[in-house]
Length: 434
Image (cartoon, rainbow, N blue to C red; front, side):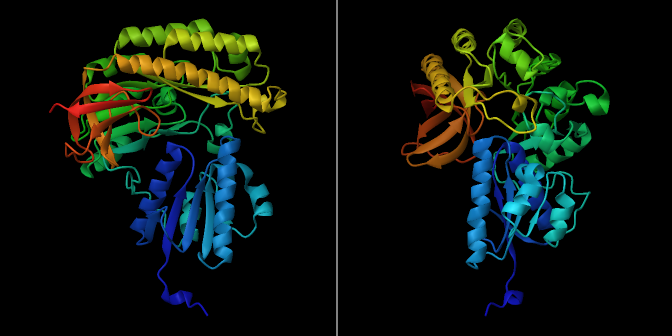
């Protein structure tokens, strides 16, 4: 017979999905630790909290499979309790309770106090910025807002995350100072929509002012911008980017498509002409800026002509970084009323074609870097290489710089100047200069 009373509970937090979820898991873990709980991230523990993603079909599938996997462990007696939180349970709680009833409890995205209570912990308001970071020690995500007010037809995020809600500048500064004190050197600013930051609190777009406050923090060397929306982009941000060396010359701006008819159906509030002009303005204002974008192919009604327009535009714009996704037909979104009429294999073919074009562009741009020197931060060691990034690269999604570890010793989180000696599609090989 198992005597559970003698065993100290260990809570294992499992994170699925995007960087916003990573951030939420870190906040949850910080709260649990403050209540004296033994908490780990994706290691062994007898109590499991799964922070799920519900964004597109693949993510939902992964979340459901992970829940089922831990339910088997529970049945086998390897874990005692399983709790589910995050976007999937926010969106499908009644269905999940019916389909997988053995889960101890389901919680939505705004039910952190309830989840903590179920785990025997108290929610403490005063813990601003107290997080247990799960990323390598040199960088951390800083979530500056929650939710989204945009009406994009294909997106289920407002259903799961609610309306846009900015975090006050002074709270973000406190949080960033705590991260810097713990050795974080790079802040990656995230939100569903960075460009909307401040409208609800300050009645104006206030991202530039936030950046001005964050660059003053000692210890922070890089500040990176993720997930900016193209409509209504606050151009004063570019002035700060140009003026402040700490703000990386990097912008992640998901554009989704470029055909006017598709953009209109997607309810993006822009056109091909406006988007092209915006990108040109970015490049003119910050000449050595790296732009990352993401595109969706196979949206309802996307014709061969629409796709050709997109392909030609990708070739013409020569984005430094680009990702491409196939359209996912999400219930309760505006686009769900349309017929999902592009076959899966056609969607996949189109995505592959875009990525082939992009890998050629990336290869050509990388060849130009041979012989040039760059400041690089070291993220980790892998085999015989130290793996780092330039200011033009975000972790996990962008290019990496590989430095021979057999001839050089480097530390994680260290900044070094390197010279590029060889280049592939998405990797640069370099040697340390100083």
